Length: 138
Image (cartoon, rainbow, N blue to C red; front, side):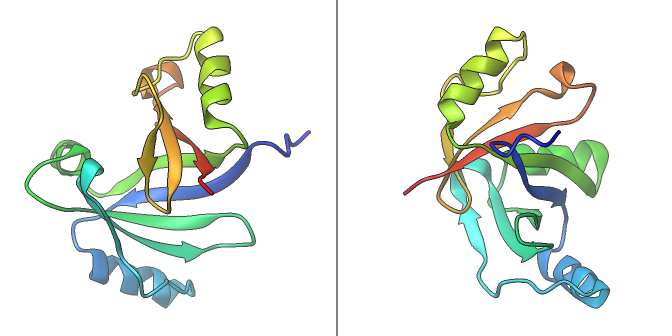
């Protein structure tokens, strides 16, 4: 049964050329917002396209000289980077996950793209998939 308090928010894909990648997915039929958001703390520029009433595709392109996406692309190349789930209270979810033995990347959630409070569950805790949990800030 689906937990209505945990909804797929987006699938993120790491890319080297943001606008070239936007065109590829637009050719598939998605429609991207014209806005691009730079998240300096993560070293990325993002582009979002809605896939349905809840889920989006997020393209992540390196910004600046260094950051997690730079390292990811150097090590693994372009491709799916993480899946993000929207939750009503990210701090509560972090606590629940830690109590169940999961390792989170940040001690406290941080502000991410789209004015959201986020944290990530380490892939070593999830069978190799980086998971993000996210709460929209008001």
